[in-house]
Image 1 (spheres, rainbow, N blue to C red):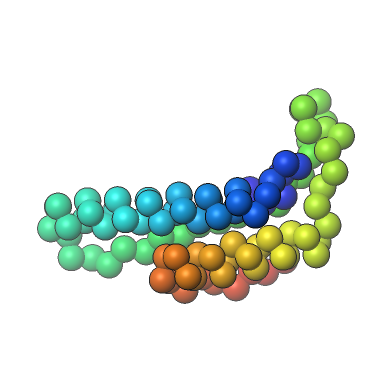
Image 2: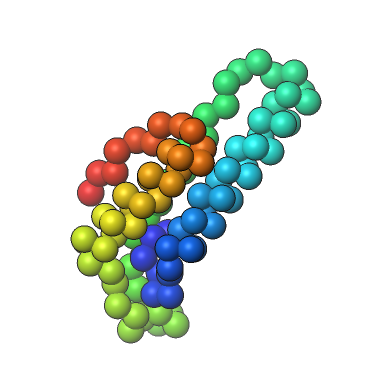
Length: 91
């Protein structure tokens, strides 16, 4: 989820690092089990929307421009770290 009230770019980096670890572990399992299929990792992100009657009900929602910048940043980091193609962000 992108756009949480306390989110920083370091948090986005950690999200990408988690995906890298998942892919690494899945590839190791694939090799251990002698599976010859290629591994595709799909990650989906969504926009944080404050909901009523939750601790975040009065938290501001990020603007479209802020979300697009965070999505672009995350996409570029994934391309660099995971060495895979990431589909285009569509709003």
